[in-house]
Image 1 (cartoon, rainbow over the protein chains, first blue to last red):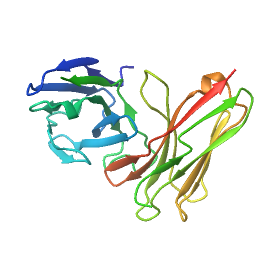
Image 2: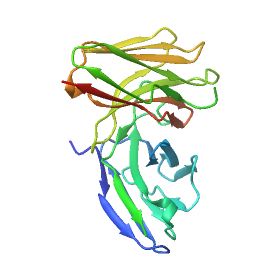
Image 3: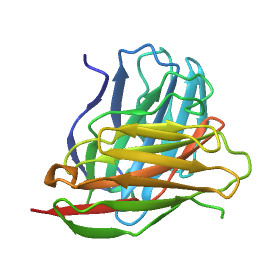
Image 4: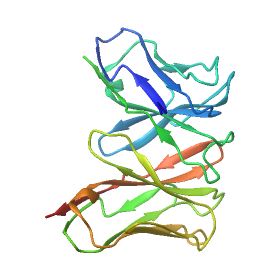
Length: 117
Length: 110
């Protein structure tokens, strides 16, 4: 059971570089989301999607783009990396289409640790 | 309460002690309250999702209660074991979004 798979696990970027964090789930979940984890801040929502072709902004969307061309994949793009984007990124999915508002919890990937120098 | 707040931030307990944590959340527009267990170097794993006022959930030695009218939830661990050492996150599930607290870090001392 793969669940939610994130790649890469670690990445170091220089300021101004771009990259894509990959997220794939094999549970046929409609809802997918990206969070960042910073010390003392808790998990903060970057972007989310309630189905293929539908995305929306979360709490901290600036500097990030997402797309949802298939149910399985939800990549997160950093357009021009900045040191403030150094963080641990988690992808999470849920079986509830409107988001994890019923009895459906979030299923998390193992995270991507990103350092921007 | 505008955000999800958890207390205490951290605590140390002796093996065998029972303990509890608090999660406070906005009571308006409530949908669901989640508890997650997050071990170091791993990803958060769901413990409970509760939706109804008065809900009580139990998994082994861990249980949780929910009061949606006053906006709080308690997580209880009975007879703490070293393997219970982790950060416990609560989150308020809203329409299409989940808002997390900063967690309570528990260390159980053998």
